[in-house]
Image (cartoon, rainbow over the protein chains, first blue to last red):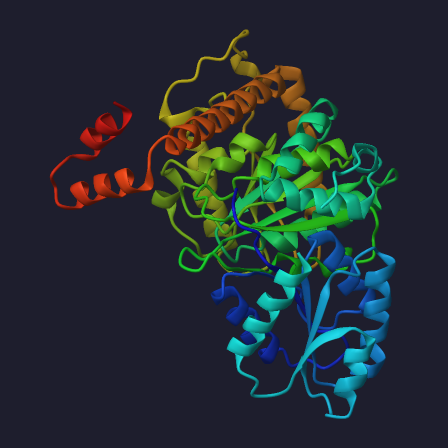
Length: 134
Length: 332
């Protein structure tokens, strides 16, 4: 039987139109052997939760540079839960002030990464969380 | 995970469906057991394949087709299976077909699932046919199957789909490309997308020339390039289908109504000529053969120790034995 492939949805919620970071991370996860579903720019929380459900992903990676993370992430978490996907791990990348990090983690976000975070670290932490969840 | 409730799949419950699709994709015992139970419920959906070179606009076209099916008087439940390539080195993949399908978000009558090819070379993944069965049993009709960006030989889709669209776009090749065997040959419908680009007339002319040179043939899929004998009466020549060439602009939906009409005409033709049944039979036979081959190979490999196998590869590398000789020695 083939090994379980880690499936990751990479999405950009909100209105900022800069997706280079999301693409770099998508590429790094691909090179780490994961299957990355890339959804592109300007996704609403509803679109992200729907895609996460249809694709049955293990992880949702959100790239947010607009500063709207405190507004965008809670509805995504709520929708995932409502869909029966509370097991899905959330990773956030982008511009997040330090004081918001503990608040996001309290809400249920697994990892938060700022600019310059090494992709190896992201890969390692995704692997570790998915392993414990299985 | 827990055993899927077959009832919840048949009633189209989305989370149960999504999870079962993963089990089936991973070829797990749970997935196989569910497929056994679901199989009697399959065979209802029209399977439409969409193939063509990378960047011809397959995903955008699938997006528009799904919108069109949803906008009909009786909206259809549309499933989309979109395959993108896995890296041959890391096994990872970036599946980007959803990017072009954002118009379909929020519609509970559409279910999009992305698949990585996971080492298969025919344009689909090994589990694509099984995933399609799950959607079929769950009541989705039509099921749109988008292949990886295909070159000349990724023709597995013609085995799986009832109707195969080959998508071309201006500037991709001349008349010689058009008369080669392979992908153009499998087209039931030829779509020239990006019809607003210059060069459209040349592409159309090359494709028309190809069709003009060809004598229409009954398209029952032959495997391994061999003649495949299908039981039942041969279709009459008058009933042969000549692939239409249609122009579309997938970014704004131009030509999509005509395309869907042609797809429906093709389905009608298949039913009238008896080709539908012949294709189904050829498909089942091909699928049986694939599974049988896989199972026999796996069963055989279980009986051969890894060290013996490795030694044989070593011998091959040192040219001490030929590949056929190795097979004979292992089977002894």
